[in-house]
Length: 197
Length: 312
Image (cartoon, rainbow over all chains, first blue to last red; front, side, top):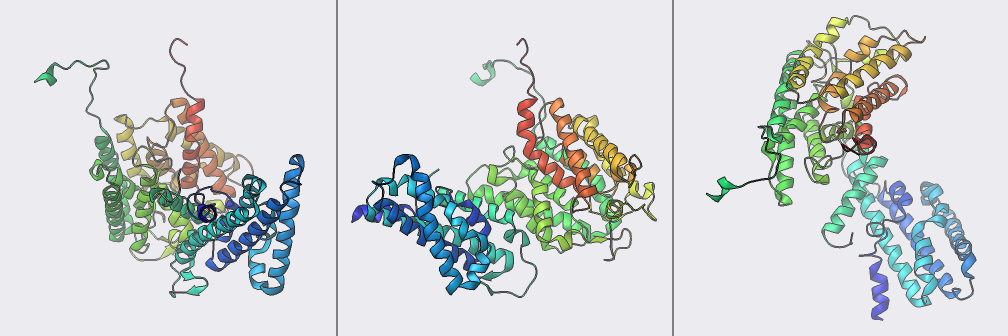
């Protein structure tokens, strides 16, 4: 049980995908313009991560080593398709604003990295906890960035405007703002010792 | 008393130069164009300069105190950054704008990298570009000169970009600063006085400014009009922030190449990017972006222009 908690918590702190491993940057930089989108993206990626880790771990002794990456992609793509169709059916608004970044979860390097580095050589239960921890770590990372960018760039939190004004820092919701926020947060997390360099 | 018998290895030469002295002398050389800017645009310009300098110095002090490093606010580098930032702003921006810009300049442009000497980009230009991207409305609204009220007006560069001839503005107007623009960039005469002081006392070399201005002149002569070789190159040199940028910002010791050969490459690169942005880009002025892009290229330029070791 103790080791399961460790597998779960390492994705949130030391090996946080956003601030520690610095993986999955495309969605992190592109989707973090609003908190609502960021949480949606994080939950979708977590769903895919947990189930792909589960299946890959279960099949780890049957997948030949030479074709393992194509096999992983087929498994991941299956869950991404489930996720995409589910979002279209039940949350069409979110599906529209995330757009291409939902299908792109297939090539998200966090998911590939966990499949290759963890699920392919570990038992099922630790793999699920690893996927869950990584997914929550990613969701937290992208949400923190999105919270700061949305607050400074458009003066609102999850779409709820706080101030009636036009003087917000426009650059924060443009791409330089994403890179600035992310860089400063990585520095802060290292300063606080949450992640290692 | 043992200290007086201390024997060091060479070099034994001593000079009175220090970072502090150079920074304050560059600041001094920028005073004439600031005075001209205040005369041309009114006392509002003075407040913007004062606010930018104060904000820069206070930010530097707070960050150095918070990270428990040596407090170096009196070496003049923060004052210079604030001053250059203010010179890059129009004269009627709201008073919080220079403050935000100076905080970004010092915090994100300089202290994040470890302070003076470590920054890869010119801090004042980082602040200016941040403001330009965030509040383009304020950054591109210029006061008409010598009218002392907020009558907005297009800069000569905006007209040049559209390929029109300059109406009502002579070369003499451009040279003396009787045109809309940023506080410190308009009076070419005052800028050249400061630049001449720096060049004659050898605080800056002529390589970057000359290659920069020459490239801009040449390219704007060739491509600046509808037909080739008919551009108004003299207006291109005199308008916008070219003179301020070429003499005072592209020559920043920290962010420009070390060798003369590298400085030529740097200046020519700045010139090409400036003209491309001015003639075909989305903004009428490209000096700040050109210098920042070449700042990023400086380590590569330094690597390929490293001098041969004597005897090798």
